[in-house]
Amino acid sequence: MAKLVASRAGAALGSWFIERERVVIGRAEGAGIRLEDQAVSKQHAAIEMAGNDHILQDLGSANGTFVNGTRVTRHLMRHGDVVEILDFQLRYVDHKSVVGNEGERTMIFHATDADPAPGPAPGGRALAAEARALEVKLPEGVLRSAGQGGGREIVLDHALTALGRRGEEYAAIFRRPGGYFIARVEGKPPRVNGKPIPDDWQPLGAGDIVQVGIEKLELSLADREHR
Amino acid sequence: MSRLALDVAARSDLGRVRSFNEDSFVTDAERGVVAVADGMAEHKGADLAAKLATTTLVQSLIAGHNLAPRAATHAAFAAANRAILERARADPTLKGMGTTLALAWFQGDRVSIAHVGDSRVYRWRTGRLERLTTDHSFVQSQLSAGQMTSEEARVSRSRQLVTRVLGAEEQVVPDLGEHEVLPGDVYLLCTDGLHDLVEDGDIASALEVLAPNLELAASTLIAMANDRGGRDNVSVVVVRVDRRRESKRAPEPEPHGLFGWLRTKLGS
Image (cartoon, rainbow over all chains, first blue to last red; front, side):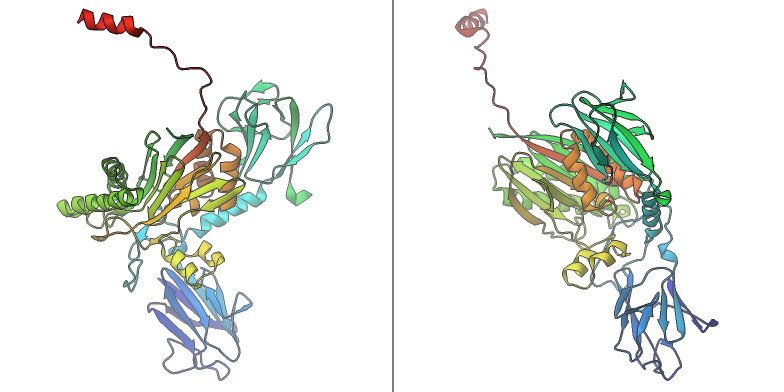
């Protein structure tokens, strides 16, 4: 069950669970969440259920509705969002966004269901964010011609980078949160530091010499933060 | 005999969070039939629903091989739906089990695509990844109605809500499509454990770069989903279409010829 924790200019005002399909925030007496200040519109904003989501909508208020500092007319609520209406702050707390140990279960949505989420419905955003964080921390990999010839530089900025030629010696580099990996796709296996690699993805480290066909490339890793 | 040949690889994985695999897939390269299913249940039977769907689908397509593809596909989805409903009626603990189902049925230079739920069929062709199915899901309906932006869809908590499945109602209507098949095409069938976590650009990259090695392509797609949290079971079927290699040599002569035939006849 999600709730809004309200405060005004730093002083706690209490909290409201969002239990109904639609909750109005405003100055009106009938408002589900009543903010008593003349500058708040009678029907200032509303939070509505859509599937398993809460959608915040500004109801054409005079002074606007802000989420995390940005004025919004419509916003899909996420755990930790702060709704600001004048000097009122409403923090959106949603325990469902903490991932359960069974992950996300597919469920049948019936259009007539008042609440389509009787079972566990964790958001899983924490993990997605974690994956993105790992992605950012991964050093930038570049393959540069080693030995004679030189000049070629391949930036490994895609999930997969092809090396060699189709139908002949052909390999790929796989960029993963844990680093860079190489595998044979077809033809003779690529050599790493002179040795043919076994099948499937093999980890690569900085300074490794990769050889596919006649081409010899050296992997360099640069920490983005120190560039 | 078709001028096109199919190469197929498939793989299913638990993911990194779940303790049971409730997906199912089937590949029958001989008949050109590949399918994936993602089961769900109120109590139990999710894996059974998925398995019933893929096995019944193939049996029914074989039984209906002299029907037109559309009719045969409709009949096969109806049969799969019936099989799940009947099993659930026979065993109350299975009540509420259901499944998604996505099918690609290759017949010469045509492919019939059919689906129910949020399992998908993609096609990689000449540098472009295209989705050939439209999810039967709450988020897709919100997107189509302009009620949700694609950015919101990515973080929505409603992503696991499907609006059409096998096993929920007496009648189920799959979305059907027919497409031309070209040599070089790569098709991907997957459950939402893949497409919910792995972006289209990365899927495209795997199909493009790893197309010559479908086993590697399948395991790499699964690794991508697990690298991004592996929140759900993930199943993938990849199909590459190649021009059938014409045999340059004349057919071998009969091993024994007339004498062999005579010997057989006389010896019996």
